[in-house]
Length: 77
Image 1 (cartoon, helix red, strand yellow):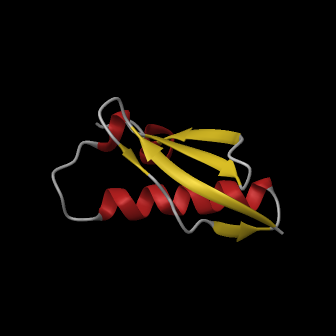
Image 2 (image 1 turned 90 degrees about the vertical axis):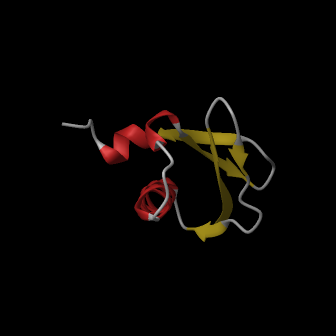
């Protein structure tokens, strides 16, 4: 198990994940990242999430991968 953190940012602000999550592998981290994106974007607010990026970091602060929100949300129709 690896402890990873899911930080979100755009060009104006950053949301820092202080708790993180334990994952067994990168596939589980990717699935959790998609859940984080869906959770944030389904909240009732006026935020335009299309320019946000989720950064997945290990417990040493090294970035493992990024997930642009638009990859999870898809393109608007």
